[in-house]
Length: 144
Image 1 (cartoon, rainbow, N blue to C red):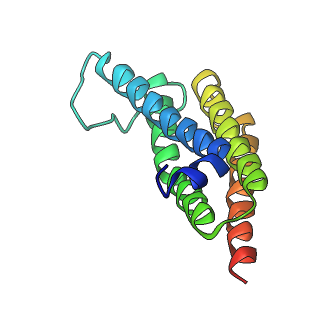
Image 2 (cartoon, rainbow, N blue to C red; image 1 turned 135 degrees about the vertical axis):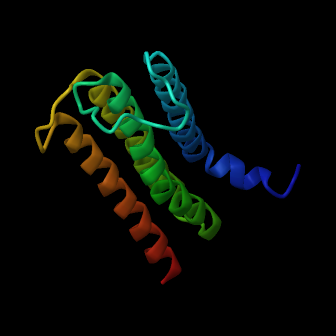
């Protein structure tokens, strides 16, 4: 038995949730890349600035970049939470809520072309944000 095995067992559910978060971002990257390459005028690394929410290329690009912008805000505190030994049940609840919220956010961004704010996806973005804050609070409470 390695020194990490007890920790891995204790935080097993959280680690699977963190895996799902990262895998979701990987899937978003693949979808955005595929959508981008299907354009008639494909230039690697360039997105036509005239595109808006009516374009799936735009929505898949924004979904992926939104996840890039927000995943670290959950992933880093979740790792810190594991390192400082927060309650594994509460951490798993917040990590899984975040993972599910991000998947629903992704699906809604893909299927609803709207400029309206808040859009239906905004509610799941906010749920993810609440999860971020909750994990930060768990870490702070453990450090006190």
